[in-house]
Length: 356
Image 1 (cartoon, rainbow, N blue to C red):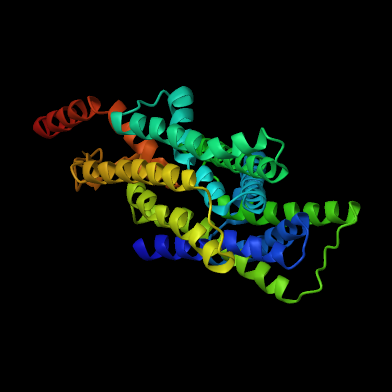
Image 2 (cartoon, rainbow, N blue to C red):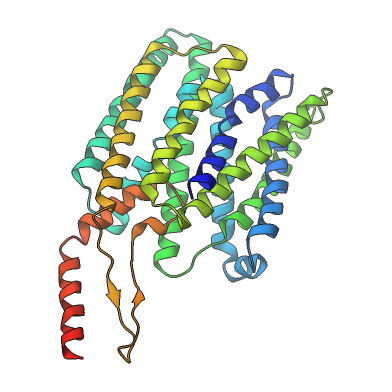
């Protein structure tokens, strides 16, 4: 599980640098996004054929839900890419990484999830960090500074992309809770190709060149497609072997290494407020994940028996089966909500054993 999670995270960390590099070669934004999505759809399609079974039947069973999930993830990819192109990469990535906080808020209002103290602390710290990171950009943009206005627009897009990802995760969680899991890998593969085609069509309509002269551009786009495919597969398969808090903690590497790649290639240094806000955000989210890991060590699995009272089969139910690092916040909420129900369930099992 650690190998799968780390592979997906480490491969996706150069994504911001590759997007910036492709744009640096003279390609317009729509061209960069178009080829990134097409290559991403191609590699995700290969992953679908290799790692998933009955993907076509899964899409047929839930066509509308699959389309919604796929195009939400495409919108997320477009949003974070534009955020990186218009603003500092560190700002864009940090603001995007707040998606677990939005997931926790949505879970509270839509599913009645409880909010443990650790989650409330993380939510408050995340909002403080966001305000700190926005302060210099808002001040400079108010002085009619065009560059700061673009930075502000890029940061807002990155923040919106994180909210869209949280909406997508919340919808996947709802479908999982109702027993209708969605093949997100297959849905994303198709949506990426369609979204990439639409971006290139928009480029043609606006007079942008969609075939850059630099052949190196397509090599970069190909690697970027592999990066986003690794992220999708890692988030889909790692939760089978690791709990969500472990994955969430490992995912912080992306938040740290992403801006580092951009610095190594372009020597980009953001405002000092980005370092301050980023430190607050990383400490808050990291502390939350560590607390959840420590709690998960004390969970006692429930045991159920078949109707004949024969060999028991494991029946451990946790919220960590959702395919996202953000689900650790859902896991914390579920644990708090069900804290008083577990002893009652254990008593019922003991009564059944005594009766038999």
